[in-house]
Amino acid sequence: MLLGYSCGHLNNGVDDEEPNYPGNYGACVCCSRVSINVSGQIYETQLRTLEQFPETLLGHADKRRKFYDRIRDQYFFDRNRRAFDAILHYYQSGGRLRRPMDISVDVFADEIKFFQLGTEAMAKYQEIEGYVFDDSEYAKYGNALSPAMYEKKRKKLPKNKYQRTVWLLFEKPESSNPARVVAVMSISVIFLSIICFCLETVPSLQHAWIDKLNASRPMPAAETASEITSSPQWDVTDKKNLIMSNLDPNAINASNPNVTGISSKRWVPHFTQNPFWIIETICICWFTIELSCRFLSCPTKTSFCFDVLNIIDLVAIVPYFVTTASLATATDEAEDTQNSSKGISLAFIRVVRLVRVFRIFKLSRHSTGLQILGQTLKSSFRELGLLLFFVLIGVILFSSAVYFAEIDAQLPEGKQTYFKSIPDAFWWAIVTMTTVGYGDMHPITVAGKMVGSVCALTGILCLALPVPVIVSNFMYFYQRAVANKTRDDMK
Figure 1 (spheres, rainbow, N blue to C red):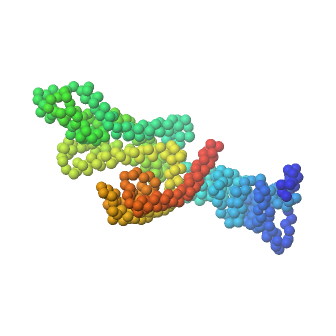
Figure 2 (cartoon, helix red, strand yellow):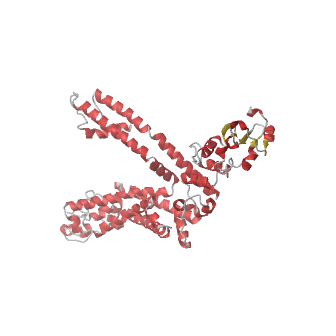
C-alpha cells in the first residue's frame, strides 16, 4: 500500500504537524506507540523509549516533526535499514551502540550524525572502532571521553617546534613531501638490506670477492714454503673474517697453484673488505639515524620504548653491533683453541646474525596491509590457540594410531616401517593434517593407510573451523583502516 502512493502524494503528506497519539495504547501519551518507516521497512516502538534521549532526532518532538507523514500516520526516513536496527537498539538498550558487521564504519558514522545521537555516542563508537583522536578534535567532542581515555586515544605530537618537525618527518609520511621522501628511502634501505642478507649466502658470491682480491694481491716474499705458510696474511685460521662473511672455514681452504707446499693456504681478506659488510654498514647507519631521531623527538619516551614497531627497529640493528663487537675483540689465540667455548662463540654469532631476518617486519611501519594482518592475528589469538589445541590432539591421536598399526605388521621383505616410535610419527601427523604431504614418511600397511586417510580429513576440518572468525576480524580491521584513511583525506 505504501508503494501505491505517488511521490507527489508522499511529499504532500509529510507535514510539520505533530501527530495526536491515540489514547487506546495507555493512559499516558508516553506509552503510545510510534510508527517509523525507514526506506519501506516499518518499525514500531513506544514514545517513552525514544524520549530517553531527548536531545536526539527521534527523541525530540520538534526535530522529528518535519519527518512526520500525517496521511500514513508515521515518520518516514530515507536511510539505511540495517544501520537503523542498531540506531533503534541504542534507544531500546539505554545507550548501547554496536555497528552491524555488514555496515561500513563511515556509513554507520553518517547514520549517527543524521539521527543526532550526540558527541558522547559518537566518541564511544569511535573508541570501540579504534579511532585515534587528533588534538584539534578533543574540543569537538567535549567531555565525551574521560581524560585517561583521551590520553590513550589521541594522537600526541611533541610540543617543541623542532621536535615536532623531526617527528612528523620520520613518523608521518603523509604530513609533507620531505616526509614521503624519507619514507621511500627507508623502504628502499630495508629492501636493500634484505636482498644483501639473502645474496651473501650464495656460494659463488661468497668466494667471488675473495678470489678477486687474491688475484690482485702480490704473492708474499718468502724463501721457503714454511715461511709462507706461517705468514699471518695467508693464515686461513682467521675465522672471524670467515664467519662475518658467512663463509665456511673448511670450504675456503682452496689450493693456490702459484705457491708450492701451501696447498691448504689462501689469503683471507679482513671482513671489513667484504662488499656485503660495507652495504650492511650503510644500511645500519641509516636505521640507527632513523631510530635515534624518532626516539629523541618522540612525545613520550615510555610509550616509544614499549611500542612493538620500535622494538622491531631495535632488533633489526642490534645483531650488527653485537657481531661486529664480538669479532673485533676476539683474539686469534681464543679462536684457535679447540674447545667448546669456540663452538659456542661461533654458534652465538650465527644465531645473532639470523635475527637480521626479522628486519623484514620493519616494512609494517610503511604497510597498512601488514598492520591489518598483525591486528587480525592479535584479535584472533584465542581462535588460533584453539586451532593449535585441536591440531595437538590430532597429532597425538594419529601418531599413536599409525605407530601401533605399523609396528607389529607383517611387512614385505626388504621394507621397514618409518614409524620407530610415537614421537617419530609426530612429524608425519603434522604434515598429513596440514595436507602438505612431503612423502618422506608414509604408512605401508592397509591399517596405516586408513589411519592416514582419516588423519588428512580430520586435519582439513580442524584447519577450516577458525577461518571464518579470522576472516571476519580481518574485514573489521580492514574497513576500519579504510574509514580512517577516508577521514584523514577529507581533512
